[in-house]
Image (cartoon, rainbow, N blue to C red; front, side, top):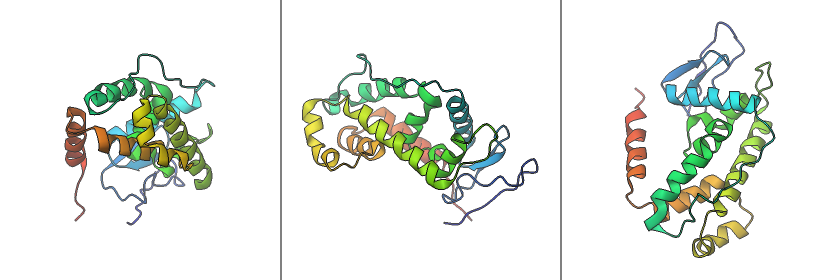
Length: 198
């Protein structure tokens, strides 16, 4: 896909956050001085994540006892909603948006999330390392919420050292989500927010 850069008159050095994705609608994130390609919703999420990262305290997210253990299809919706409640307030929702593959969590977006207070984006390799660390952290948190039988069914992927919370989330969703309302709404939202390029 092609990259499109929209110049910012306040910051000519600012570049397209998601240029390699090639999404067509844009939203300006004036506070950070760059444009995000995707949706206004993703732009707002990116601002929230950048602000949360800059004001973050050294606290570690821990799975609490209110998150049910995923045993299978029958409790997937409840499990998913409890994880939503756990992940969204933490780091501006970065973990949740990462699982949902929101454009605000691309490697290029991470360049701006982890930018120092001078708003100069970090390099791509460092951003990729931060994103990988988040995926590993999410993987560990998800594992803590799985019943022994579910955990054993995903043992091969986990024991191989491939710690990617996004892939584990996708595998769990594919196996247990079925036709729940949350999955249906996510699909409808994806269709509604997508557009065809001319």
